[in-house]
Length: 357
Ligand SMILES: Cc1cc2nc3c(=O)[nH]c(=O)nc-3n(C[C@H](O)[C@H](O)[C@H](O)COP(=O)(O)O)c2cc1C
Image 1 (spheres, rainbow, N blue to C red):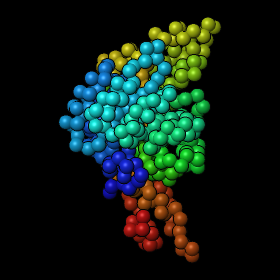
Image 2: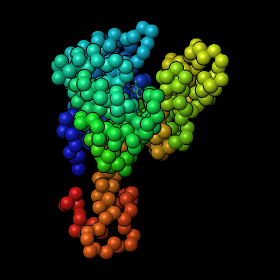
Image 3: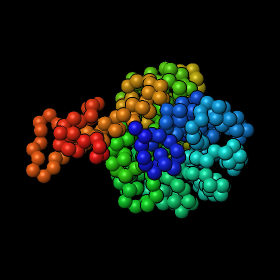
Image 4: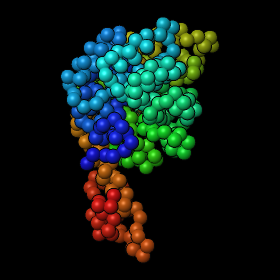
């Protein structure tokens, strides 16, 4: 059953699920599989060493799917920043009309992309940043709660608060990001006012994600408690998988008397993190994962995952009808619970069946 939300209408997708940009994971194999499944797949621009490589990746992805897909452009502080304008120009030249932006000072890039009518989903972890992005003309906010993988921000506000704050105060459509893995989560996000969800970690753990199977298995084996917040001392907090290296980095961060970043730098090296995905050794370097690892128990194809989430969300929304009865009607025992994987026949008996949903 195709969904009908502001997100599905604006992006031309069937299921309101976005696969967020993921460094060293967001290649054409994954993005095209998500788009073919009815969601929005996203290539990660900076996973490509140069803008020309991004051009080739976009062309490769286009051969793998006829459906819409987007590109993530993440602007992070760096001693020698990438040529963001050149990456954005390739995105424009290649006819990509959906971009996920994230990170600091996105103004110039958003201006460049909006000038040609690109639809922008901007990811942020605070309402204040969301309001600044609205002034820049973004079309959707992607509200990333404290549960999320990667850059969680410095305020530690979880999605229960952030999403309702977004609904109360933004006036621009938003999607919920961080902590989502199933259709019950999608239904909850829609109930809180979001028009879709964004998932990162859950999509890492799919057949098509181009990372070593050992890392997918490490996610399946992990609990929600198995993440670490690293680099808080330098106000650049990242949620990472709690492996040996991440724990050592946190230990140094907490005990160092000098507080010099150089002391932890070798532990949080992006180069070693990238190798983890290739060599399959979960302790080789640090790698990004969200608390949602506790909800991930299998490695499905993107098609299986997206259609499962779609089915669960529809079931969950339909079953929620059993949580209330009409005036004068008697509650029937055994009902009044959402979360079973069946539709609710009792809702039909009460006359609040599917036709009215
Ligand atoms: C391995 C990995 C790499 C990521 N890299 C980026 C990135 O380069 N840029 C970005 O905006 N978000 C990045 N993210 C964050 C995701 O796009 C998404 O916002 C986040 O994963 C949502 O939380 P979840 O993992 O609980 O679904 C990354 C996430 C993961 C798991």
